[in-house]
Image 1 (cartoon, one colour):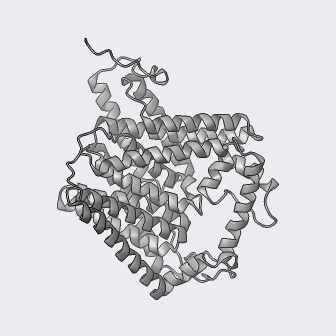
Image 2 (cartoon, rainbow, N blue to C red; image 1 turned 60 degrees about the horizontal axis):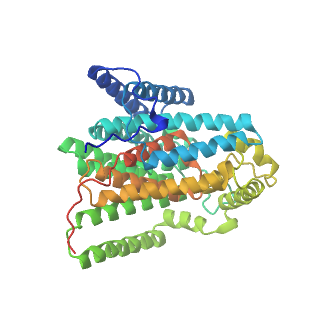
Image 3 (spheres, rainbow, N blue to C red; image 1 turned 180 degrees about the vertical axis):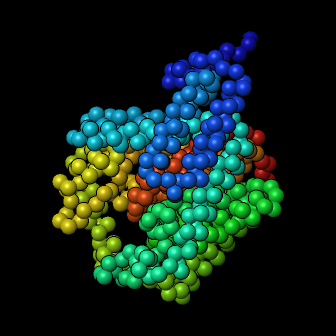
Length: 439
């Protein structure tokens, strides 16, 4: 009996309604690729107007391309994104400040448009991952060079970024074209594992040298940003990608060594970090400020904002106040402690709870778990995007660790890199041919 075609999902029935030729499909593919390359290469340099127009163009192009391209599968990652989007719509409708929340919803829609375009492009050919990463590394190289040059700038032009009550007072921090050391670190964190995998994946000495320089300068710039959350995020991202690559490369080894070698590497890495934290003065100073509790002004500020955010969550636990910083800025003054103004909850999990409540947090956790399963499939897969999937998983781990104590992730320079990683994971098929394992 012949197999019947699976019914097209209701949400995708608008796709492929306009007849098109193969030449038109190819033109749209290259237009999409060049637009996304320009976006990723100029992320740190574009102003808000330029960035907004480019994101809008990407979203519009994803709709146009969808109209002429036959629909495919929605996929598990995209399904959870749609669930989160539906929750955000409900949160906007029930928000105490619906007009402000609508602005946040529009931003979410625009980011989903960029994600859709990235996913469609990667679905046409995995070679586009190499081109998009090359563009991303271009912006990262420019940002890192500008930031590192600031080490030699006059003292009055540098950012000390600590008030007199901080144990880290006087620490000079670089910030590059992004204007903020924490934002610079947040932007670089997810790019570092991508650069490492590009170094392993790309062919040719020039391409490998390009990725290696980008990786080295990115690590250097992150270190000199003296962002505590950035350091933790960078260590997490690099540790995860190194362990994942080690597990993949030793998948044919005897079981004992497969389990023992990663443990040895983790122990040696931890020992090196302990030595650096106790023997290198700048690192010791920043670590001291991290564990200083309320005696450090930066810690004290965040703790007070977190307490106010928890009160906001208790007031509206199920659907929150609605998405976006505009809604947060309208509601937070009603709960804030005196003299502790804030533009966000300074914690990604808290921000999600504030904006979309428990429903949004559960959908986000489901998205994270699904992404992890897709990424870990790359350990034993021959899929062309298997290694990029591991890099994307490590990038998300770094963003998650940094996001515990900061909300830099919601800035477009950082969030769009996260959407690229998510689009990469969405195109990784776990059912591909598995690498042979020996016990």
